[in-house]
Length: 346
Ligand code: PMV
Image (cartoon, rainbow, N blue to C red; front, side):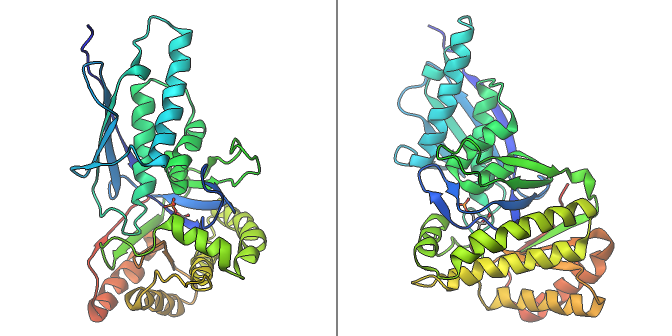
């Protein structure tokens, strides 16, 4: 028998949205209520490393070891959805060329590790599913483009579809029932805006309170402000921020980023029961950004918060001392911070 172990490794980056994905119109396929846009961070700072292997000498079901612990992927519908699609893609490849090994029939072993806290609102699921999909696609030698693979990663975790590309990435909500047009695409490359920087301030590396899927459902079902956000506000902001990115207009980029983060947390508070992700330390970070911008006379820093209290601050390299420098000084005085990642964009 052929006992060869086939293996492929890859890494995937974290992305931090400036226009937030919050709300599903289809929970099985992870189809969003609105488009979103993110910046992919450099893998020098935050990333997931994943190795996928398969062999006919492996026994038992497919397994995933995440940060040294065996995960229960048999009961994870999202992981199973990704694995099934990727195996189907491989089967199609094997059908076209019968000389290829039948990898699609072999048990998979996945080993994955983050170099940052998992599920602390640091978009770990995004990098995680992007790395899982890319590693298996590499193992299976699939011919699919990053945009095609984004549809697979999306089924693992919505935001993961945006981590298959670098730079500035839009996830188009699409309108098809089967999700065929709900895809990620790069709207500008990293090199388009080489000055862009991100600073990640870790308030707490603890697991977040309300998981994003449950939180989104509560918001969609109960928030009275939500329909206006999803149908009117976000479409306008998507167009405006894409224009700001093309023009490298930081003040506009910063204002939209902060307004959209606040709008997302406002619909969370407007949900019933209300969802709180920000805490006093997060609010101290918002105040620090406001002070920095007031002193500068224009926005030179932008905060944004995901489903947790940690802050991500976007700024330009030319403002490093006025932003990152002042931030460290202010936060020392405030206290309550667990750490910091000087996350580069490239
Ligand atoms: O991909 P999920 O289900 O973890 O949802 C992520 C939601 C936010 O991080 C809050 C916003 C976003 O667009 O990434």
